[in-house]
Each structure stands twice: as C-alpha cells, then as structure tokens.
Image (tube, rainbow, N blue to C red; front, side, top):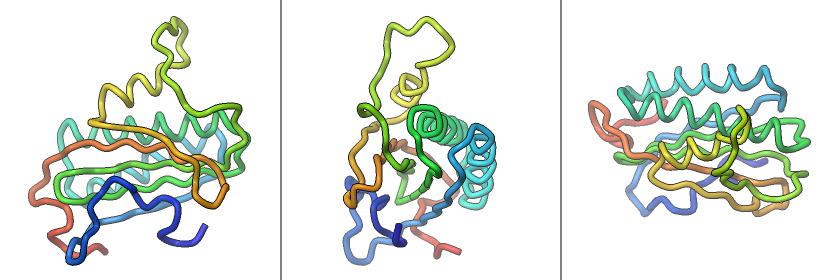
Length: 158
C-alpha cells in the first residue's frame, strides 16, 4: 500500500492549512500482534499527550479492531493508522480481505467472543467500514473525541 492511500479518513476535514498528526504501522496478522499493536498505539498516544478516558478507549479500540482483522480474515498482515486532528482521533485498521462478509455487531452473543464491535460502538462517537479502494481488503475505522494539552494539529508531527 502506498503511503497516504487507502487509510486516509474519508470523514475528516483536511482542507488547506489543516494539519493532522498521523501514525501508521503494519504487523503480521497473528494473535501475538494484538499486544504489539496496543504497545505501539500507547507509545504514539503518549507522544501526542492524549490522556484519560480517550487514551484508554483508543488503546481498547486498536486492540479490538486488530483482533477482528486477525481472527476473522485470512490476512497475512494488518495495517493500523492513528490520525489526530483537532479534538478528534480516528483509528483505522486495514486487513487484506478474504472475509465472508463485513464486520457486524452481535448484540446477542453470550460467549467471550463476538463483543469487540459492541465495545467499539460503545466507546467511539462513530465507526464503520468500507472496502479499500484498491481491492486490497477492508478498512474498519472508529472516531472518538479527546482532550489533550493542546488540540492535535497545533504542533508539527515528528
């Protein structure tokens, strides 16, 4: 995937003069990568000075979206993007597809599996999914409001 391609959020205003902080990483699509995704997300959110409930929610959302990509697809890798603009944080995870259908909420699940998107739905202000434009998989994203010492985009990204 070319830098800045399929994971660029469709719902964020990136008008001229607007600056967003962006961090993207790829991991092998195996269960051990979920902990790695959480660790990478925490490190970046710390660098961006994100704190409180939004920090915890963001780490949990990263964990759930990466888990879904690992468990419910036959992908070899997953790509995660964190994008901070103003007082919004967007998390997007792209798999390589090969899933029978798109992600869906399972409100009646009684076992320990199947609650990930319920958590994402509860913790985010909005979420959704769409096919990657180049037919390379599916992107599942979530947005949440946050507060930092100063809004994202008021400082230059590293």
